[in-house]
Length: 412
Ligand SMILES: Cc1cc2nc3c(=O)[nH]c(=O)nc-3n(C[C@H](O)[C@H](O)[C@H](O)COP(=O)(O)O)c2cc1C
Image (tube, rainbow, N blue to C red; front, side, top):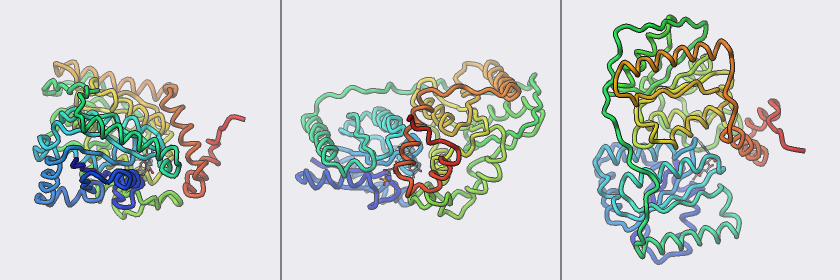
């Protein structure tokens, strides 16, 4: 069979995840494998149409597509997310239709299920036959039992694909309500907070609803809200996964990201993230923002700030994304304020929702309470705690932080 492997890791040939697919090719060599390095070559794919088209042609002629990616911030890396957007933008979904597909990931098994759900949902949207993937731990391949199990999975996947067994979809298509939000001329709420609110957005001039929701949110407050558009920040690219930051907390990029983080985000009391859903997540621009936060490792450095979301898109139909946002807040220890969306049928109701959001923020800050962590935060903390402790010689900055903040709360 013709098998195309799409690598999402920005590390290209040095990707740990690719070691799994290398092993597959070594153990089952009697197929025709082609590999693409989307994570490493995303800029080329974006700018070189003939290269992109050649890739799409190979995919179109394949029997099987295997997605290989590291889990980055509850999801696939920003570069792979961007590739999904390019497939839509260039009308190339047809090339994927009907193919048998699965995902292989490596990670610390933290929120890998959410990344797999994302890829599963995208493949469902593209009418592919998606078989639930294989979320390995990053060092699994070193263990014989895990290697054998991985080959068992591949044998199973290839059998189903070759026999073209029917596969049912896990995710229903997203329905959009095509509602255009027009802000009310008169806003009744006028809240004055002695706190700094920073609103981060990726809105372009075409994102009418989110721009108008931000406008209404702004008019609810008597004080000035610092609105920062991610497109105006000099962010040179997505996280490279190089791991240099693990020892000293410094990113190898020399661009505007650290200034954004230290001067704007870290000085805020309240953070609002606003954006429009693109396919099954937010935009690749938002994903780049989250991934680039990795220079803070596994340290919840924003832990004295509240965080809320304003989202345009059918979030009520996308529980995976909602869980990612809630998980982010619990792991960052930035108590969640609320998630406001434009899933309304008239502008008046949405304006009232945003006004109420502003009032809820004010009351939350006054009482200074926070939601209790659920499994997302409690379980996530334990996974991170054990990960940092077991890799303390590499994750030096995390280890120092965890020691000094008494995060090593192992049971005795
Ligand atoms: C930006 C970034 C974000 C990450 N986020 C997660 C995560 O959410 N969950 C997790 O288990 N591991 C996370 N990791 C760890 C990687 O998934 C893991 O190191 C993976 O094996 C790297 O694979 P690769 O070498 O193929 O790129 C993250 C690593 C980076 C650099």
